[in-house]
Amino acid sequence: MRTDGLDLGLHAAGSPALGMLELSQVQWYLLLGTGIAVIGLVRMLLTSDLVARLIALNVTGIGSLMIIMALAARAAEPEGPVSDGAAAGIDPVLSALVITGLVITVAFTGLGAVLIRRIEGSRDGGDAPDGEVQR
Image (cartoon, rainbow, N blue to C red; front, side):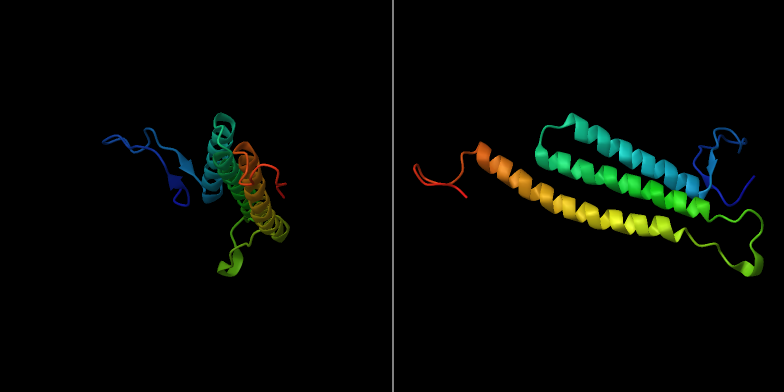
């Protein structure tokens, strides 16, 4: 039985191996990121509200960024025992990709919010009286 994994199973009385699923920390974050991305994608496809779609798109993006970070950590896992107690770091290129992805997500969220405001403003007919041009 490995002690470095996460135990996600229910244990039957007297049978510790029944229904047990051990995952490493990297596998746990890969599974969690995949779940978050799928939940966001399903919500984005099933809703018609534009704000809910924008939030679901952000949730999907966060799930994919979590997957990338888990893959970066997996790439840095040591093959054998680590000498001198030094832990292996994560891949700096993938970390930079995630940080860039976060910045792009914030920018597109702002752009999406402005576009949603304009779309819903045009659906409502706007606030301008008759004969006045809206800007």
